[in-house]
Image (cartoon, rainbow, N blue to C red):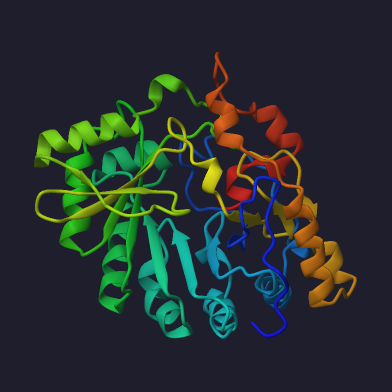
Length: 346
């Protein structure tokens, strides 16, 4: 990007390379591992960043060398005219990767428009293939809509479709092989995610976590020997593996094998709060700078100052907790709703 500043690094030398960009805090599911409570405190509509404001902030991140943006929520496809934002961001030459994470409910109607707008990649959450389990996990009977959304993404021609499955003991851990076969049949790469104790996971228990090692052992029993993908993992959240037939998949082991040392991701909430860790208790208000008319360079300087002071190693800190339970009670989340995972692009 013309006029780029020097690459910014945090207290531990980790570069800022990626931003998870939440465009809305609301969601049309109530997943038990993310939004299990009956009521939530929503961001005021007038506080949400407008698309032009989001684009200005992305330009500021670009000045600092950020090349990857992932659009998240809540559920991002609830944000009106999202393809317009994708089109605005896709025109930024410094973005080498523009992705979207969605629960898939609304994807069937929007997949083609998102691809045409310039979206590079899509990740869809798929925790189960069974409609009854889907209802138990999400409070919704719309499982068929998720499948339809995945199939629409395949038909639209997204080159790098990923599926994410949060694994919970006694709920969907008997579906690992079936989920992997489903993804393989659609040319998608599945990533299994350990149940995390962050944000809205108010019912989290260590007993419900199915570890990476358990996931791999289960898949080996179903498919045969599993091999790690050779090469440097870099800053990827997922450790990648292959089945004997060459099918690749990933495991995100944030709970039992945290990878804080290589984390290069920042998070921007829908109302412009800048967080440098999913576990962070405090963030920086960037919306104030934008609405006061700060230049892109001033915005970049504010971001750089915050990142240079970053010492977050949230998942590693949690691993060291002996009597580990949920990170926060529901009462704390109601008082400080920005601590919710769905507000900061979990």
